[in-house]
Image 1: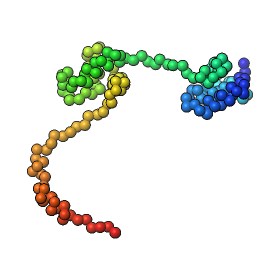
Image 2: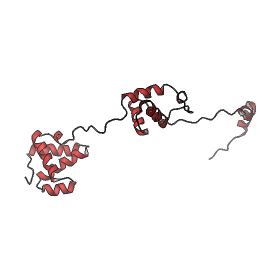
Image 3: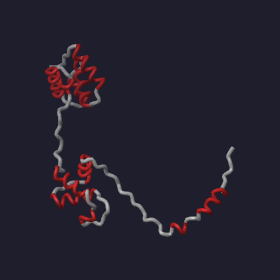
Image 4: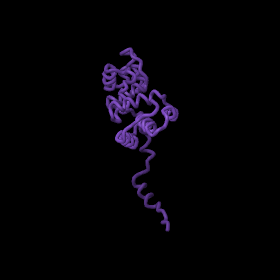
Length: 179
């Protein structure tokens, strides 16, 4: 099979898909089939798109079986299995209800390393900061850095000018108008 033969209706469908899709893989597969149907050699199209000739033939067979652009889309990919399961989420929920000092840390706020340490100690599960943050996001939490607030200055009242003097100064400091 040197070329790919498409009907006018199939070509129109693929042209429409080519102009409307935002999926790069679907675009490349659609383009490959259209170029082959226009008379270009499969090996030339495969080289230009960085795929094998067999891939293009497989896409053509899938498309001609189903006669829809959905035949060219990727199937679901399971991805890497999660390390943080429901037990981790349950533990995090309980830990976030208390402060870290109740667990023996000298801290007022939870940090990712502290939470990872607690997960490791309680569940014997290793998880990194990124995994922990993803788990917290799934649980509806947003991660923010704590702000450090200085204690109020006990000498503030002595440093503050009198209220009567400050109003007199405010009236005396007039700025000239710019013209």
